[in-house]
Length: 409
Image 1: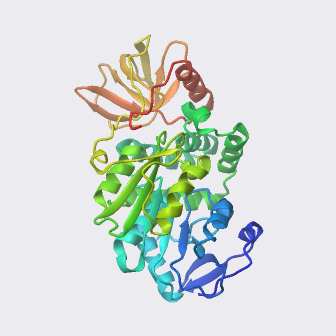
Image 2: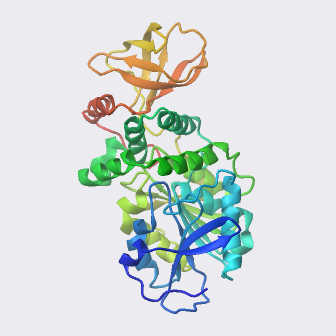
Image 3: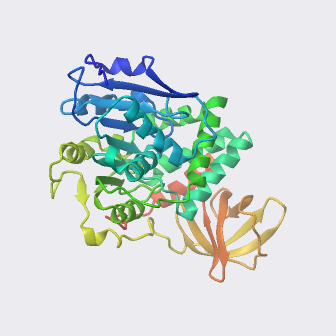
């Protein structure tokens, strides 16, 4: 591997190097202080809506102690090549081929959101090629509610409802009830919303293929055996803290830390708190028992975190109406209600139709909902937050109530 030694954030916008593997193209940039550096390189793998430019600060920070490689596999980041034939596992295997082709030493991947699944699979399937791995926003997508929301996003895109998709996706990334704690500036939130709203047809197809890979993924047959650090934003509703902790518990040698006052974008919202952990971890040093802005979970805590991520309480007005797009309407009793979902009781027909429902509550606009499961306990549902006005009204109602500390904190 020949590294560039002239790193500047401006270079991240330049055309990448390309490794051709048959018809597949892998885009990368590689930096170090020495053009030939034998040390294990950090490999950055981003999530949806991220590009090399997203990691300008990280590269500057990491280069002090490590070579750094940014990699976009087909359909990732700035790599526009579509590869619908490749599964999540096959994409992860491409990382090993990339390392072999460029004769790299064992890698140290940092995987964020979608990239975390690729990094974790690479570490699990190619243990000799991975020295250690850092994961944030781990997307195993075994939780039924998360899968339902991902499927709803794909359905909205298929219907051409990009505005509705954008509002739902943004709510998953940035928890609206915790904006004050996470410090997300309104200008950043608006910029991210515009970015999602303006996805091109090619971007949408790449998102669709990547999301379908996650939905098709059967789960981890094996977990990383190398040293592993899992970072969870304490207010992350999209990939919840207990899911991070369960993943860490399944690994051979893993630590899990809660990043306080952060949600799914923890590494950007609380950069210093994350840096204080990944800096010693990547150098092979012991993690600090106490670190500003985070809490390291004890081993015995990993399988004990509360899976209820938000309070679900009886609303002040329990009586409401439930409508379906086919014209049906029923009186319902809401026994639990939260910003992200709830539980209601009604004399409903058994149905497999998860979409097309609206909840009509007093003093609130009609709330689109997705039916999660229906049994003797009632109808459990999640809000897709695809209607901006309805979502904002619901957020305002919950923001007027005191929010408890996150169940996992």
